[in-house]
Image (tube, rainbow, N blue to C red; front, side):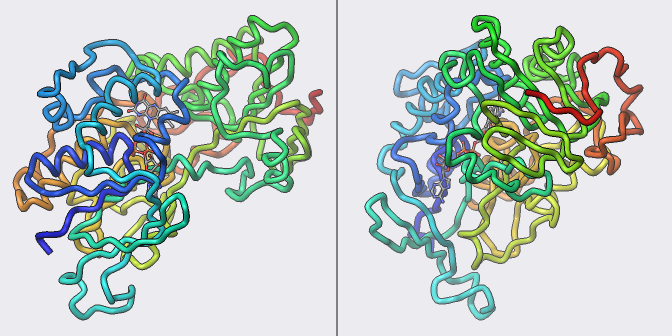
Length: 440
Ligand SMILES: Cc1cc2nc3c(=O)[nH]c(=O)nc-3n(C[C@H](O)[C@H](O)[C@H](O)COP(=O)(O)OP(=O)(O)OC[C@H]3O[C@@H](n4cnc5c(N)ncnc54)[C@H](O)[C@@H]3O)c2cc1C
């Protein structure tokens, strides 16, 4: 098997970094990317400005691969997704050359001649990847190990509060009345002079509220309603000044300001049940009549093509079990998360690793630097350097979000207990609507 490549699924920031580490360790990467270009997912949110600064967005092995080509690492500032691609990810993909295959969608991963049930000789058999090209041609590729860096971008969570599409959600999406992308102030047509409802409560929802607020400033008659499942608590607007990534903290602070100055109407305790055109209705009967619905409720991993693999995932988050304990929003945390490596990511299926955004399953707090540390450790393990694999070379910045204790999504709860301090004074927010309403 040592002649076979290590298959890397996805040429996003993490798959590309994994390939750079593999080359540095003398292993052969074969990166399979479903899109026709590198970092195809990042390309789709290219207008969004990252809250991480340039040095936090560049993998060290990737930089070592790029430096001899004359590439210079951008030293400061916060790129947009498009700039991240243009100034780092695309040059990195160019440097990896033929090690990447585009328009190659992985539809299945198995062990040669062994389905999931078969124990005999399992670990000695190569992996077989089922790959489909853009024209539908099928192929089988063998690999000695598999690093799944396929992200979660193509599996957005639905608006439905029960985790399934709300009644009418698919039809609204097909009709163009409901979408899953952060609005772009440079393309205001769908929102200018119209009423948009944003559903969701994380960083992407903050971004959406901030983009729409910018559009509203230039376009009279633009209305924004923001519907969240929770009550307003210490955590609703992120970690603010307590966030060790200042631009991440600032996203929520800006969104809170938009609520406080009346630019945005915040509706709390809203559990979406139905969508009819662009009218969304909650379980308790409240309706918001809008022209456009923007759903930003997080993402989930695609585990379908791993159905023949033996996985040990957390039943709640769908993340490798040892990682989930760090990031489960139901568990109490004081804002700190540890770095994770090969040991945490290892699966019952030897030499298979889920890394990057996908390794966080449904949890929303993944950072590129978390993934770069993961791929460093995983590749060291695959290369037999167990000491380097076990070493932790990263300390993650605190989120400033004190969460969990099992009540993170309780609409009645305004505190999270433990180290979380006192709840935000709710009178600060004066446009919250909790009584049954019809907004039009
Ligand atoms: C809007 C937004 C802003 C973010 N901002 C930050 C930030 O400021 N700082 C930070 O640290 N992190 C940020 N993140 C989180 C994270 O760093 C990024 O999502 C990052 O792109 C994750 O990298 P990835 O390689 O794991 O996944 P992706 O970027 O999603 O790449 C996965 C790749 O796999 C491909 N793929 C998927 N399925 C298959 C398949 N079956 N076969 C073949 N190829 C496949 C996809 O086409 C894609 O190119 C942000 C995320 C989003 C969505």
